[in-house]
Image (cartoon, rainbow, N blue to C red; front, top):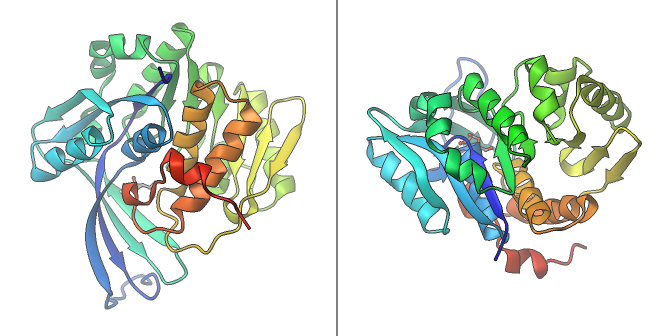
Length: 305
Ligand code: RIB
C-alpha cells in the first residue's frame, strides 16, 4: 500500500499564452497559442505525488463555474482523493500565464475559491490529515489556513513540508517550528531570509538563516543549477540533470510532489531529492502544468545525459 501524501492547497485553471517574449509594461504582443490547462501549485503537487507513486488526498476549494468541475476531474482521473475538495459559490482560481521562446514564464494568479479555504475547512477534513504520512502546503491559500495546516501536521506527528510559493516576504516566525522540510526557490529564499540568493554561496547563507529561524531542513531549488540541501550540520549541492527546456511551469511543483512521494515511500532524503530532480527535469521538457508532470514509469526510464 503506497504511503499517503495529503496536499493542502490551491487549484487553478491556467490560461496559457505562448509568445516570442514576455511583454513589457504597457505593451501589447501578438501571441502564438492559447490553451486552458489544469494547474495551481497545490493541485500540481498532488498530481505529481500521485503520478510518482503515492496515495494522495487533496484539501482545497473550487468554484461553481465550469473550471471547478474540470479542476476536480483532473485530480480524480489521477486517483487523487477529492472528498475534502469543497465547492463554494463563485469563480475558481485562475492563473494568467505567458511562456516565452526561452521557456521562461510570467504568472498572475487570482485566488477565487482558493481564498475560501479556511481553518474551519481543515478542521472539517481533520480525518484526512490524521490519515497522512506527509502533509504538503504552499502559499496560494490564505495564510491563516496554511498556518493551521502546518501546526496541525506537527501536532499529529506527520512529516510537514512547506513550499513557500509564491513568497513576498518573511514567514510568520511561529510557523518554523512546525516545518520539517522548507523548499523555496531562489526568489522565495530571498524573500524569506532577506539574503539575495543568486549563487550557491548565498543559498548557503540563506539556508543557514532559515534553519536558525527553526525550519528542520531546507532545500533551496536553484533551477538549472540543481538544489542545495541544508540540515544544520552541513550542506549538499545536488546538480540538476541537463535537459532542453520547453516550459518551466510546474517544475518546482513536480520537484515538491516527487520529493514528498519518495519520502513517504521510505526513500532517504538524498534519494528523494534526486527523484524529485529527475521528475522536475522531465517536466520542463513538456508544455503546461499538470500535462507536463511525468509518471513513475517515465522517471524510472529516464537516463540523464
Ligand atoms: O507553479 C505553477 C503554478 O503556479 C501554475 O499551475 C499556476 O496555476 C500557478 O499557481
